[in-house]
Amino acid sequence: MKMKRVRLGGSDVEVSEICLGTMTFGNQTAEPDAHAQMDRAVEIGLSFFDCAEMYPVNPVRRETFGGSEEVIGRWLARGGSRDRVQIATKITGPTQLIRDGAPFDGKTVLDCIDRSLSRLQSDYIDLYQLHWPVRGSYAFRQNWTYDPSAQSRQETLDHMADVLEALKTARKAGKIRAAGLSNESAWGLTKWCDVATALDAPRMAAIQNEYSLLYRAYDTDLAEVAVNEDVTLLSYSPLAAGILTGKYANGNIPDKSRVAVDKSVGGMGNLGGRLTARALTAADAYADLAGQHGWDPVHMAIAWQLTRPFKVVPIVGATDTAQLQHLIDGFGRELPDELLRGINKLHRQHPMPY
Picture 1 (cartoon, rainbow, N blue to C red):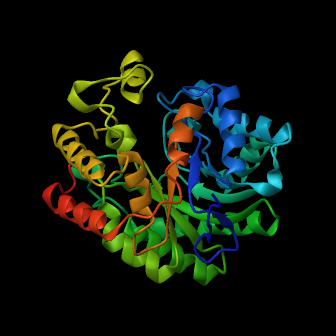
Picture 2: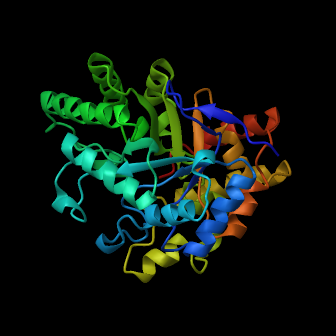
C-alpha cells in the first residue's frame, strides 16, 4: 500500500495521513519494540510520529519526563532517516510534575524547545504543540465541572502574544517548522489564530484533541473554526483508549492493557473516565455493526476518521509491533456507504457515552 500525504493546515509541513503515537515508548513499550515500530511505520509510508515532553504515560512520573523523546532520539541517531519522518512534540501545560506547576510563557517555550531537540537528537521539530491551555481545559472529562468564569480575557491574550513571539523566534531560527495546539476549545483556537495573524507569528496548523466514534465533541464548533481557519485535527484516542477494540467487553481486563497497568500502580483503571457501562454498550453495538459488514471494528474506527468533512489525521498507538501490524492491515480501505449510514444511526442511539 502507498499511504496518502496531507498538509497540516496552512503550513508547509506534509505528513502521512495517519500518525503514530509514541506515548508508551520507554514504559509499556520497550525501546527495541519502539524502534521496530518506527522501522515498520516508515516501511509503509507512515512517516508522522507524535510525542510530548511528558511522555511516557500510564503513569506519568517526574523521573520519566522526556523518556519517549529520548527513545525517538536514539532511533534517529542509529540511522532513523530524519529527512524521511515528521516529528511532533509538545510542551506540557501546568502540572506539579514539572516546573513546580508553573504555567509556561514564551521564555519557557524557547527553553523547552531546546530541551526537546536535545532529547530527540534533531536540529528541528516539524510540529511543536502546546499540550494544555494554561487557562484550563475541559478535556479528559473535565467538561462535567468546567468553569471558565475565573478566566481573564486580557491575561489570556497577553499570554498568547508572548508565546507566539517565542514560536516566531523559534521558527525563524529553524528550530520548528509549524505550531499547534492540544486540548483546546473553539474560542481558544480562534484567538490563537487571530493573535498570530496580528503578530505575523506562526498560525496554528493543527489541534490535537480527543476524537472517536464514542467521543465526538469536535464535530460542531471546533470543526467549524478549523475549517474556516485551515487547521488540521490530530485526533488522539481514535479507538477510545482501546474500548472500541472490544478487549474490555464482558468485564475483561487483558494483561498489560492500559486498565491493568493503571490498576497495578494504584490508579482507578477507568481509562481517564472513558470506561463506563454506556461506553461498553456503545462499543458492542459498533463491533456488531462492523461484523455485519465484514469489517474489523478497529479498522472501521480508523477508516471512519478519514471520511469526516474536515481535515483529520488520526493518531494510532500500539504497545507492540503485533498491534501495529493489525492496525496497518486495515489502512487504505474505504468504508462503504451502507456502513457509514449504520455508523450515523448508532451515533444517534449512543451519543457521547462518556
